[in-house]
Length: 384
Image (cartoon, rainbow, N blue to C red; front, top):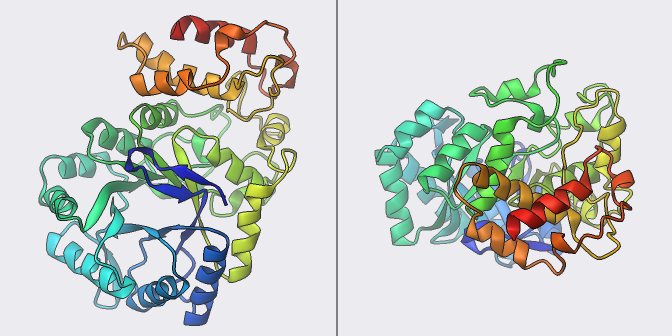
């Protein structure tokens, strides 16, 4: 297992984390087996929106017994009322739901307190406007009951609002190459809808969301890595071809600011299968070649940071230079200058863009026809 820093939380989280999406009807033995395998694989991140009391107890007992340090994403507003899940912003209900989780998890705090499932910009605006719900979150953070504030959303517009308000330290966001073509929406079901011919390339708001997260050191964890398994099925994939789990995981982990893919497991054997994605060969995790040759070709001329351009003859990490250039160029165009955090990342590279010798070895390797030599020159000028 490899670990990444989750933005300004400074938490070191596993590149594959545990989701509870499929545990609704799981037995105690199944839950325990999943956590035993997850711990053995080195996973240390858990997203728990699940409010079913019995399942929470199964998870809490399992984490206590397998040991280790678990970084929990606890959703503030996912509650259990009258035998049913209830999404709420009622402070009393939210606090009862959190107290229930803490008791069943045998802990007195969680690392990540999440604004639960917010896709509506109007609702997000109300939350950010000194709402009782937001004041509750501030109080919990001040008391140490939650250590960092997070957000769960499928809508890049909502994510941008939270980043611009400086109210969150990390965001759980739906990331995969299909969703990245979709425009922002308040209805998550639209992500599962048809992909028309007019959809080509990455949605601009999603691009800006990723860039804003990286610029502001907001760590991202990933949900919907496989688009609800749609990407794994050639008949349902919007590209007309199937991707593998390793390709989907690699795609998500190459997005700016992403630290971890949170995957749901139905049984313990799936833990090992998904953890193996991190050990896949370059050929096995190569999503770029699949997308570039798919019947429904979605991307052209856009760097996806896939790394096909490597190795550079002088040792430039071309994908990273392109990523930092994209992040900085938007701000420079606004007259704001290169963000200090992005400049720091760029300067920490062993070899910089101004050392490019324009040999051209990289460009034929790019599946999307990116003019790499020109971009290296532009990056050298921008960061000079």
